[in-house]
Amino acid sequence: MGDLDQIRRYLASEGILMSFNGPFRHSIIEELGKAVRRHLEAEAVRKSAMADVFTVFIEAAQNVAAYAAQGHWTGPERAQAETGVLVIGRRGDRYLVRCGNYVRSQDTPGLLARLDALAGMAPADLKALYKERLHAEVPPGALGAGLGLIRMARTASAPLSYSVAAEDAGLEFFSLTVTV
Image (cartoon, rainbow, N blue to C red; front, side):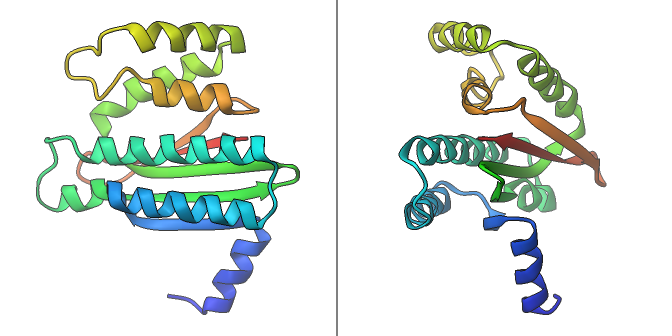
């Protein structure tokens, strides 16, 4: 691990306010949520921006935890699946909430297709889709109705952006950026 001052300088130069790297379990998400709220309050962030950042943080963290909780992980894959990264930063007058986690390569195409579809939707269409999914049955084998990604897209001030980096053993590291 490098010099801590170098890490601190890097975080400051990138506008990073908070970061977490480790297992995303519900108890940790709860504590991180409290820390996020306190940090934003200390920064005197306007209430509407604070609510938006907090909403995106919760949705992103829950997505990582829910994906890791699926029963198909075994051995060392399980530890990787539970590990995620969450970063909250500021760029100009906007906040960036970035999260990343390992996903199975076979799950990536469906995820990217959903994100691409959301990116092409107008706010009214996102609202209609949200209402539709809210009242729809969850498809068999799905983690949920996909409301978290839709909620993040609705809250964002720009289209959601993502990247995928190939890892080993059929895993990829998926990163999502939400601008609020």
